[in-house]
Image (cartoon, rainbow, N blue to C red; front, side):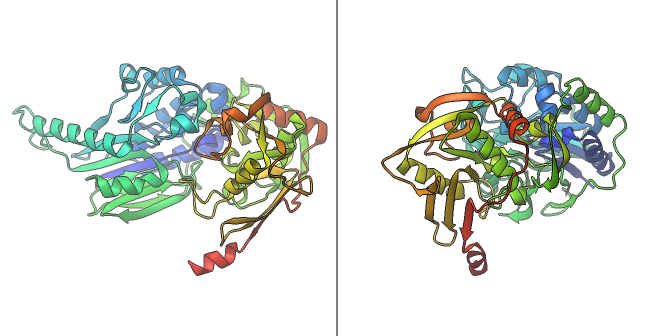
Length: 477
């Protein structure tokens, strides 16, 4: 049997070294002489340990799992292009990328070993791989702003053609082992596009697209092409059977796996050097930060963040994007600075924006994000402080929007405390832009820590977000 073992978007799994070791153990258990281990981005960042190690903790994971190939997610660039180049140069895994260009417009990382395509022999079969990254990454990640990203479909098509030509030329070489030949038995795209995987499946001649970026699981066939996503933070590992026609996949959870030897100790040693154990407060009732909660509407952890943002600027409104709140174990008992960093592990300040009431109304509409091209259709994308929004999910319109208990005046101006990312990105909250920026405060997780020390961590559900007709809309689908 010819198999691939696939993981993606493991992000802050490293913040719990034992959990990372179990995930690596599951990958090791699934691997073998008839398999190759591959990844599809957001494997180096974000997370507390990632911030401490500038993503290099993944090198321990690559070693523990014998990962062959990876591609770039948007978070691989969290510490800037130079830090990523250094990581790539030292990585035992090969990065495959066909559509990322550097500051000069040249293919990114070629001197450090990045390739547009790669061919690997797996149990006697020749498997060709191409890698692509979300073309909106320069908008999603300010640290990637100086880079550019080609259209992934066109870039992948060109790389596939080049790879197939190279394989065919190899087949003409008399010195090639006749047992393996010179052609390709299967073609696989390593993708960090999310919803764009469907376009790849319909436009390219590929057997499987192993994906990431969107944090929900997927395992289906589109246009005779297998599409797989294993979820976020090591929820599952995909085992792909390339012998099947078309290929099939099984998703395996890491629970019960024997931890990879030595990995937890190596990660814990990196974490200990950071000295992030300061307790900022304690919570009596656990605070959930799962994906379903954070993207489900108003939630306690979202209210805490929005309140902290508003507090540091004494703003009219605090706004946090749900996607900026990273998933993890609930906060229960002592909450440390490391816990706060795990929630928002980005070296970005809390910015202050000045917007008109009409613009603020648009921003509130964008929390529902019916036009955002990533995530699930029913995800809610924002959390607020000192505001209330009533949203009709079926009609896709705001029924009520207030600030400080008063209806928004479209001609007035309001200050809004937000993450730096939201002023940079055109991908979420497109109404907000750098032209609205009037001030900035400290790094986001430092603001959370300061707020927790002064006000504690005891958020409540207060009716800030009310979503109507969600169930009715779901029943009609």
